[in-house]
Image (cartoon, rainbow, N blue to C red):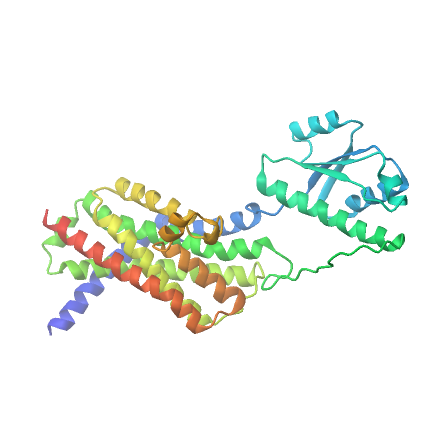
Length: 375
């Protein structure tokens, strides 16, 4: 009898939490539409790819050989406009004014050295104010020059010891940055939604002065906390599933893993994040404090997740610090299942830290809730 009454009380509070979130049409729109809108905008606008590069060339040689090299840049899909300068100073001015992202200087003895089977030099200058763009643009230029160099070696029958290498990209053959970005957005958008909804749940009750009604109700602290856990967890879980369907069917990003393992891992990862949100909510007395707490956690968590830069490239201290970050394992599991069909054993090894984080954060949230509930 007591168990049935307990279930009825919990179900009633869970229903109340769902109604609080979804009864207002504005709230429904805010929960459902922003993740989809953000997915579409970020997938189209946010990219680390470098295309439409403007290039300035100083061709002191002005010969058939140098013009053949320049024609390769015209034919490349990466370069948009090619400007010609007469001097290095003009090239420098183009880069200074951001008219061009890249500059190439071909020396006047370029053709002569090639005819004499000697090494000819080409200077590539990149705008280092944007390091990612500079690195990628230089790489494109180097690839074009390398391929042209191979043609010259064959044309003039120059036997030069070299290593001929070919690059093959696993899991993303054409290096589609949209694949990486959209799958990463599953984690980012689920983080924002689950963290925000859970962080506001208890703080909202305190601010609206309805929290005292919960305190005098037959519900225990554990029952209240459990009822506060379920709505944001299920809402974020369903939202992430919808986002995954959009990525698969609208953005045509292939899903290679097990759907069941993916859903289980997603649920466990979201539980650890909701636990952090409930902890923030338990120590917050207003919704403003809860939102500030979300921002205080969210930005470091994203930076330490491996989304911006690989965890392996971070300083030792931050690598250890990232091991406490649920987003690090969440990102690793989602990408692993999505792109390379990560097996269950590997997924489980990465789920262990998430399970521990979920238990610890939910326990801390429970203790904080009980402490602040007494005071």
